[in-house]
Structures are given as C-alpha cells and as structure tokens.
Length: 328
Image 1 (cartoon, rainbow, N blue to C red):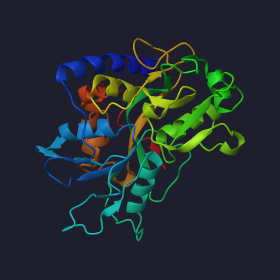
Image 2 (image 1 turned 90 degrees about the horizontal axis):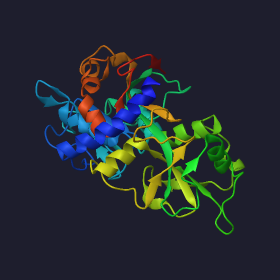
Image 3 (image 1 turned 180 degrees about the vertical axis):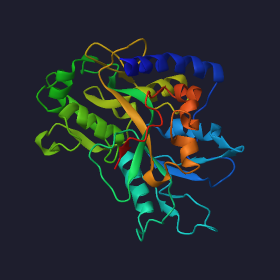
C-alpha cells in the first residue's frame, strides 16, 4: 500500500510543483555543457524526460554527469567525444529493451557497437528472467501507475475491471455494432509494452497471433493522438500528469485516462491496480565505482535524493530507490 500511496502523492505534488516552477518541455537530447558526459544512457520513452530533468541537477564538482538520449529523434546519436572515444556514433535505441540491448552490446568486447559508448540504460520494465554476460543491474528509482487511455467520445468504457481489460485484449469482447474495440500495443522494444503484456497476459512474451483484433503497428507509447473512438492503449500515469502540467510535450490529443477496478492512476487514488517500478540499468561491475555509485546506487545517491525533480515529472520515489538486488 505504501508504494501505491506514493503514486497518488506524486500526482498531487507534480501539479503543484509544475505550477510553482513554471517548467517547460525537456529537450530531446543532452543540452548545454559539457557536450559529452561521464554517463551516457539510452532506452525508455517513459522515463526519458525525468532522466533528462535529473541530468540538469545531478552534478559532481559542479559538472553535469548524465547524458540521456531520447528514444526518438535523429536516426543516430554520438555519445562520446570522437576525439577521445572514436566509434561512438550508434543507431538510436527506441525503448527499454532496445536500450538494455544497446548497453549490453557496448559492454561486450568486439560487439561492433563501440565498446564503452554507453554507461547506463533507462528501463520502465523489470529485469524479469533476462540474463547477460557481463552482468547488468536494474537500479530502481521511481514508481508510477500504468493505465489505459481512450478518446473522450470513445465507445470503449472509461471504467473497466482488469478482467474486462483482459477480455478486450484477448479479443473476447467486441464493441458496439460496426465499431469493434481495437486494443493497441506500443512499439516493440518498449518497456510499457512489456509491462502491459505481463499485466494482461501474465507474460511479456505471449503468442499474439492468437488475438487477431490487436493493433500492433509500431505506435509510439504515451501518444493519445493515435486513438480513434474504438481504440484503447496503455498509458503511463507519469506521462499523463507531466503532459497535462506542461512539464513535457503535450501528446494526449483527445484522450482521457481510464480507471481500472474503480481506481485511477492519478488524483487521490491509494490503491491503483497496476503500479510499476522504473529503473536505470548499470553494469554490475560499476556498482561501487564513481560516478555510477554516486549518481545511481543507494538511497543517498544523487538520483534518489533529487525528490523534487522526480515528483515534477509525475512519478514518486521508489521505496527501494538505489537497490542493486536485481542483477542479470
């Protein structure tokens, strides 16, 4: 219950903080000096803005440490100074799994991805059963709710039980005559996709061929503009709050956030049905090494103690912030 209560508190505090701070949408990639930083990271769309926000306040000796590259933008990114670390112009990873895989590739010798080009990855999904050599560690830092969005004029109910949601995504419930429900999935590689599949089907790797009504055409997550009046899509509560407050780019369109089992992921809810933890993935070998430990590891790390920034982007600090117990 404490974790779920924190999601509600974050929702309320975010709206207050955004109004007080007069924040504006974050830039897509690192801005300002230094151009290249000690900790280059890629991955999750869900947490790209909050990590970008943290990059402005996480300092060592007055110098920014985090260079966080968004999930979308230019086809390629350059993560390290070509003069000192050549070969670090890489394809931009889009999503949690893509970021995780890019980090792993950068850690493996002779990977072709440019060793040492990445130092961490953003992930809005848990490690699950993923294993790797070398080992990587999922370091939690925040929590949020994952609900669904529909248009304000949708034939899809704004209040559903989890059982009804499961039935819709299993193509067992159809919509009104002439307008069957169209359950949408986010793009492959998305942590939101993995989290939603696990929530709905009990596994992050279901046989989607069994469900012909699914709309799986690579829609970017947390963008309500893709919806029509018979579709629904998973949507991060943190993204919803931050978009509504103007902290980040507004992409909600005509959408509204649905309730699951009578509760919503924002406002005064203390028992939302689908709370998830978001993480930064780091090399396990760097747990006790600066600047990874200073920035990410332990409840006293710079990420965990910058509570105002985390709240500003619609999340709450995870009770296990900085833990290193989840290793691949």
